Image (cartoon, rainbow, N blue to C red; front, top):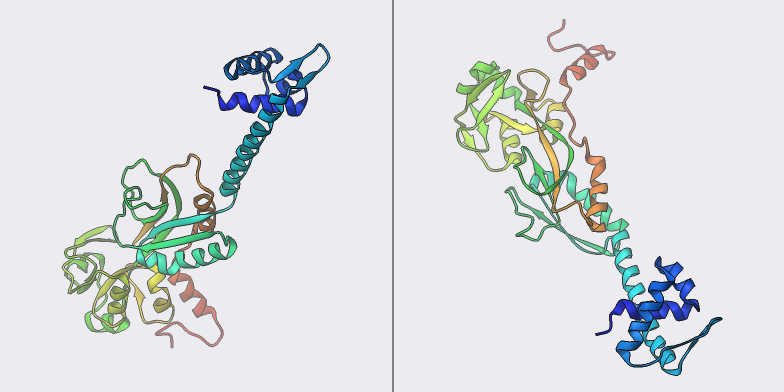
Length: 311
Protein backbone atom coordinates (compact mmCIF):
# COMPACT_ATOMS: atom_id res chain seq x y z
CA UNK A 1 0.00 0.00 0.00
CA UNK A 2 1.30 3.44 -0.94
CA UNK A 3 1.90 5.73 2.03
CA UNK A 4 0.17 9.15 1.83
CA UNK A 5 3.40 10.70 3.15
CA UNK A 6 5.25 9.38 0.07
CA UNK A 7 2.60 10.92 -2.18
CA UNK A 8 3.16 14.27 -0.46
CA UNK A 9 6.91 13.80 -0.81
CA UNK A 10 6.54 13.21 -4.55
CA UNK A 11 4.41 16.35 -4.89
CA UNK A 12 7.11 18.34 -3.08
CA UNK A 13 9.86 17.02 -5.40
CA UNK A 14 7.93 17.99 -8.53
CA UNK A 15 6.91 21.35 -7.09
CA UNK A 16 10.49 22.22 -5.98
CA UNK A 17 12.10 20.80 -9.14
CA UNK A 18 14.81 18.72 -7.44
CA UNK A 19 15.51 16.19 -4.71
CA UNK A 20 17.82 18.68 -2.99
CA UNK A 21 15.23 21.48 -2.76
CA UNK A 22 12.50 19.08 -1.60
CA UNK A 23 14.83 17.59 1.03
CA UNK A 24 15.65 21.09 2.32
CA UNK A 25 11.98 22.02 2.58
CA UNK A 26 10.99 18.80 4.34
CA UNK A 27 14.00 18.69 6.67
CA UNK A 28 15.38 15.33 5.45
CA UNK A 29 18.42 14.26 3.46
CA UNK A 30 18.61 14.15 -0.34
CA UNK A 31 19.40 10.43 -0.09
CA UNK A 32 16.22 9.79 1.90
CA UNK A 33 14.12 11.60 -0.71
CA UNK A 34 15.71 9.66 -3.56
CA UNK A 35 15.22 6.29 -1.84
CA UNK A 36 11.57 6.96 -0.95
CA UNK A 37 10.73 8.09 -4.51
CA UNK A 38 12.38 4.93 -5.85
CA UNK A 39 10.28 2.73 -3.51
CA UNK A 40 7.14 4.66 -4.48
CA UNK A 41 7.78 3.91 -8.16
CA UNK A 42 8.34 0.24 -7.29
CA UNK A 43 5.01 -0.01 -5.45
CA UNK A 44 3.15 1.73 -8.29
CA UNK A 45 4.98 -0.22 -11.00
CA UNK A 46 5.47 2.94 -13.05
CA UNK A 47 8.25 5.44 -13.73
CA UNK A 48 7.28 8.85 -12.33
CA UNK A 49 10.54 10.78 -12.90
CA UNK A 50 13.31 10.67 -15.47
CA UNK A 51 16.59 11.45 -13.71
CA UNK A 52 19.70 12.97 -15.28
CA UNK A 53 22.79 14.42 -13.68
CA UNK A 54 21.47 17.92 -14.32
CA UNK A 55 17.68 17.83 -13.93
CA UNK A 56 14.52 15.88 -13.25
CA UNK A 57 11.82 15.39 -15.82
CA UNK A 58 8.30 14.30 -14.94
CA UNK A 59 6.95 11.48 -17.10
CA UNK A 60 3.41 11.56 -18.50
CA UNK A 61 2.27 9.15 -15.80
CA UNK A 62 4.17 11.22 -13.22
CA UNK A 63 2.41 14.41 -14.36
CA UNK A 64 -1.02 12.82 -13.97
CA UNK A 65 -0.05 11.39 -10.59
CA UNK A 66 1.34 14.76 -9.49
CA UNK A 67 -2.00 16.49 -10.19
CA UNK A 68 -3.73 14.09 -7.80
CA UNK A 69 -0.98 14.28 -5.18
CA UNK A 70 -0.90 18.08 -5.33
CA UNK A 71 -4.69 18.19 -4.84
CA UNK A 72 -4.38 15.95 -1.78
CA UNK A 73 -1.57 18.16 -0.41
CA UNK A 74 -3.77 21.23 -0.88
CA UNK A 75 -6.66 19.56 0.96
CA UNK A 76 -4.36 18.63 3.85
CA UNK A 77 -3.05 22.21 4.04
CA UNK A 78 -6.63 23.48 4.01
CA UNK A 79 -7.65 21.06 6.78
CA UNK A 80 -4.66 22.12 8.89
CA UNK A 81 -5.43 25.80 8.37
CA UNK A 82 -9.07 25.26 9.26
CA UNK A 83 -8.34 23.46 12.52
CA UNK A 84 -5.72 26.08 13.44
CA UNK A 85 -8.24 28.81 12.73
CA UNK A 86 -10.74 27.06 14.98
CA UNK A 87 -8.06 27.03 17.65
CA UNK A 88 -7.47 30.77 17.21
CA UNK A 89 -11.15 31.83 17.13
CA UNK A 90 -14.00 30.37 19.20
CA UNK A 91 -16.28 28.30 16.99
CA UNK A 92 -19.17 26.05 17.98
CA UNK A 93 -20.97 25.37 21.25
CA UNK A 94 -19.44 26.12 24.66
CA UNK A 95 -21.30 24.50 27.59
CA UNK A 96 -20.74 26.23 30.94
CA UNK A 97 -22.15 25.39 34.38
CA UNK A 98 -22.37 27.73 37.36
CA UNK A 99 -24.14 28.01 40.72
CA UNK A 100 -27.36 29.94 40.19
CA UNK A 101 -26.47 33.06 42.18
CA UNK A 102 -23.00 33.49 40.69
CA UNK A 103 -24.35 32.78 37.22
CA UNK A 104 -27.01 35.47 37.46
CA UNK A 105 -24.84 38.16 39.03
CA UNK A 106 -21.44 37.64 37.42
CA UNK A 107 -21.35 34.99 34.71
CA UNK A 108 -24.23 36.31 32.59
CA UNK A 109 -22.54 39.64 31.66
CA UNK A 110 -19.35 37.75 30.71
CA UNK A 111 -21.35 35.45 28.42
CA UNK A 112 -23.13 38.38 26.76
CA UNK A 113 -19.83 40.14 26.06
CA UNK A 114 -18.21 36.91 24.82
CA UNK A 115 -20.98 36.29 22.29
CA UNK A 116 -20.77 39.88 21.06
CA UNK A 117 -17.01 39.57 20.57
CA UNK A 118 -17.01 36.14 18.89
CA UNK A 119 -19.97 35.76 16.51
CA UNK A 120 -19.06 32.17 15.50
CA UNK A 121 -19.42 30.95 19.09
CA UNK A 122 -22.54 29.67 20.84
CA UNK A 123 -22.92 29.27 24.60
CA UNK A 124 -25.18 27.11 26.72
CA UNK A 125 -25.30 28.13 30.39
CA UNK A 126 -26.44 25.54 32.93
CA UNK A 127 -27.30 27.10 36.29
CA UNK A 128 -27.30 24.39 38.94
CA UNK A 129 -26.71 24.45 42.71
CA UNK A 130 -25.20 20.96 42.70
CA UNK A 131 -21.89 19.32 41.89
CA UNK A 132 -22.04 18.71 38.15
CA UNK A 133 -19.88 16.09 36.46
CA UNK A 134 -18.14 17.80 33.55
CA UNK A 135 -17.27 14.65 31.66
CA UNK A 136 -20.56 12.78 32.09
CA UNK A 137 -22.67 15.87 31.36
CA UNK A 138 -20.61 17.04 28.39
CA UNK A 139 -19.59 20.39 29.90
CA UNK A 140 -16.60 22.42 28.76
CA UNK A 141 -16.24 24.46 31.94
CA UNK A 142 -17.81 24.77 35.40
CA UNK A 143 -17.70 27.45 38.09
CA UNK A 144 -17.30 26.08 41.62
CA UNK A 145 -17.62 28.03 44.85
CA UNK A 146 -16.15 26.73 48.08
CA UNK A 147 -13.75 23.91 48.83
CA UNK A 148 -12.68 21.80 45.88
CA UNK A 149 -12.62 18.04 45.92
CA UNK A 150 -9.54 16.23 44.62
CA UNK A 151 -9.93 15.54 40.91
CA UNK A 152 -8.04 15.27 37.66
CA UNK A 153 -9.67 18.44 36.32
CA UNK A 154 -7.69 21.56 35.46
CA UNK A 155 -8.40 24.52 37.78
CA UNK A 156 -8.08 28.29 37.56
CA UNK A 157 -8.83 30.41 40.63
CA UNK A 158 -11.09 33.38 39.92
CA UNK A 159 -11.15 34.94 43.36
CA UNK A 160 -12.82 34.65 46.75
CA UNK A 161 -16.32 35.72 47.77
CA UNK A 162 -16.86 37.15 51.27
CA UNK A 163 -19.83 35.99 53.31
CA UNK A 164 -21.34 38.03 56.21
CA UNK A 165 -23.59 37.56 59.21
CA UNK A 166 -26.38 40.12 58.88
CA UNK A 167 -29.61 41.07 60.60
CA UNK A 168 -32.09 43.92 60.29
CA UNK A 169 -32.16 46.87 62.71
CA UNK A 170 -35.76 45.89 63.58
CA UNK A 171 -34.66 42.38 64.56
CA UNK A 172 -31.75 43.68 66.64
CA UNK A 173 -34.01 46.19 68.40
CA UNK A 174 -36.43 43.40 69.31
CA UNK A 175 -34.02 40.60 70.25
CA UNK A 176 -30.79 42.47 70.98
CA UNK A 177 -27.40 42.11 69.32
CA UNK A 178 -25.96 38.69 70.12
CA UNK A 179 -22.33 37.93 70.79
CA UNK A 180 -20.58 35.00 69.13
CA UNK A 181 -21.39 32.69 72.07
CA UNK A 182 -25.07 33.57 71.90
CA UNK A 183 -25.44 32.70 68.22
CA UNK A 184 -26.43 29.10 68.99
CA UNK A 185 -29.61 30.23 70.76
CA UNK A 186 -30.44 33.11 68.39
CA UNK A 187 -33.18 33.09 65.76
CA UNK A 188 -31.40 32.26 62.50
CA UNK A 189 -32.21 31.78 58.83
CA UNK A 190 -30.33 28.81 57.39
CA UNK A 191 -29.94 27.14 54.03
CA UNK A 192 -29.74 23.72 55.69
CA UNK A 193 -31.02 22.21 58.91
CA UNK A 194 -28.50 22.26 61.78
CA UNK A 195 -25.76 24.17 60.02
CA UNK A 196 -22.49 24.92 61.79
CA UNK A 197 -21.55 28.60 61.85
CA UNK A 198 -18.32 30.14 63.15
CA UNK A 199 -18.34 33.68 64.57
CA UNK A 200 -15.49 35.29 66.46
CA UNK A 201 -13.73 31.95 66.64
CA UNK A 202 -16.76 30.32 68.31
CA UNK A 203 -18.36 27.35 66.54
CA UNK A 204 -22.13 27.08 66.87
CA UNK A 205 -24.57 24.48 65.55
CA UNK A 206 -27.69 26.47 64.77
CA UNK A 207 -31.31 25.33 64.68
CA UNK A 208 -32.83 27.71 62.10
CA UNK A 209 -36.23 29.24 62.68
CA UNK A 210 -36.46 29.33 58.88
CA UNK A 211 -34.67 26.97 56.46
CA UNK A 212 -34.57 27.82 52.75
CA UNK A 213 -32.62 26.47 49.78
CA UNK A 214 -32.10 29.87 48.16
CA UNK A 215 -29.70 32.54 49.43
CA UNK A 216 -31.77 35.35 47.88
CA UNK A 217 -34.70 34.28 50.07
CA UNK A 218 -32.41 34.02 53.11
CA UNK A 219 -31.28 37.61 52.56
CA UNK A 220 -34.85 38.85 52.11
CA UNK A 221 -35.86 37.02 55.30
CA UNK A 222 -33.09 38.81 57.20
CA UNK A 223 -34.25 42.18 55.81
CA UNK A 224 -37.80 41.31 56.90
CA UNK A 225 -36.59 40.75 60.48
CA UNK A 226 -37.07 36.97 60.58
CA UNK A 227 -33.59 36.28 61.92
CA UNK A 228 -29.83 36.36 61.45
CA UNK A 229 -28.62 35.13 58.05
CA UNK A 230 -25.21 34.22 56.68
CA UNK A 231 -25.17 35.46 53.06
CA UNK A 232 -22.65 36.49 50.38
CA UNK A 233 -21.69 40.14 49.98
CA UNK A 234 -23.14 40.24 46.47
CA UNK A 235 -26.60 39.75 48.00
CA UNK A 236 -26.47 41.90 51.10
CA UNK A 237 -24.19 44.79 50.12
CA UNK A 238 -26.96 47.15 48.97
CA UNK A 239 -29.09 46.44 52.04
CA UNK A 240 -26.06 47.08 54.29
CA UNK A 241 -25.28 50.33 52.51
CA UNK A 242 -28.81 51.69 52.82
CA UNK A 243 -29.24 50.56 56.43
CA UNK A 244 -31.75 47.74 55.97
CA UNK A 245 -29.19 45.26 57.29
CA UNK A 246 -26.38 45.42 59.84
CA UNK A 247 -23.19 43.36 59.73
CA UNK A 248 -22.69 41.38 62.95
CA UNK A 249 -19.59 40.25 64.85
CA UNK A 250 -17.25 42.94 63.53
CA UNK A 251 -16.80 44.49 60.09
CA UNK A 252 -14.87 41.58 58.61
CA UNK A 253 -16.48 38.73 56.68
CA UNK A 254 -17.61 35.55 58.38
CA UNK A 255 -15.69 33.58 55.76
CA UNK A 256 -14.25 33.76 52.27
CA UNK A 257 -15.46 31.21 49.73
CA UNK A 258 -13.04 30.52 46.88
CA UNK A 259 -14.33 30.79 43.31
CA UNK A 260 -12.73 28.48 40.72
CA UNK A 261 -13.19 27.60 37.06
CA UNK A 262 -12.79 23.88 36.31
CA UNK A 263 -12.25 22.35 32.86
CA UNK A 264 -11.23 18.90 31.64
CA UNK A 265 -7.60 19.49 30.59
CA UNK A 266 -4.95 22.12 29.95
CA UNK A 267 -3.63 20.17 26.93
CA UNK A 268 -4.76 21.34 23.48
CA UNK A 269 -7.28 23.64 25.10
CA UNK A 270 -9.94 24.64 22.53
CA UNK A 271 -10.07 28.33 21.68
CA UNK A 272 -13.63 28.63 22.98
CA UNK A 273 -12.54 27.45 26.45
CA UNK A 274 -9.21 29.32 26.50
CA UNK A 275 -10.74 32.65 25.49
CA UNK A 276 -13.71 32.23 27.81
CA UNK A 277 -11.29 31.67 30.69
CA UNK A 278 -9.53 34.88 29.66
CA UNK A 279 -12.90 36.65 29.69
CA UNK A 280 -13.40 35.45 33.27
CA UNK A 281 -10.00 36.85 34.33
CA UNK A 282 -11.39 40.33 35.24
CA UNK A 283 -13.49 38.52 37.87
CA UNK A 284 -10.38 37.54 39.85
CA UNK A 285 -11.63 39.71 42.72
CA UNK A 286 -15.29 40.19 41.76
CA UNK A 287 -16.94 40.09 45.15
CA UNK A 288 -16.44 43.23 47.26
CA UNK A 289 -15.78 43.33 50.96
CA UNK A 290 -18.23 45.37 53.02
CA UNK A 291 -15.96 47.86 54.78
CA UNK A 292 -18.55 49.03 57.27
CA UNK A 293 -15.99 50.54 59.65
CA UNK A 294 -14.56 52.76 56.91
CA UNK A 295 -18.05 53.92 55.90
CA UNK A 296 -18.90 54.84 59.49
CA UNK A 297 -15.71 56.91 59.77
CA UNK A 298 -16.43 58.61 56.45
CA UNK A 299 -19.96 59.44 57.57
CA UNK A 300 -18.65 60.88 60.84
CA UNK A 301 -16.20 63.15 58.99
CA UNK A 302 -18.73 64.34 56.41
CA UNK A 303 -19.97 67.95 56.92
CA UNK A 304 -23.38 68.15 58.59
CA UNK A 305 -23.39 64.48 59.55
CA UNK A 306 -22.85 63.01 62.99
CA UNK A 307 -22.48 59.46 64.16
CA UNK A 308 -25.65 57.84 65.48
CA UNK A 309 -26.17 58.85 69.10
CA UNK A 310 -23.96 61.97 68.88
CA UNK A 311 -25.33 65.08 70.60
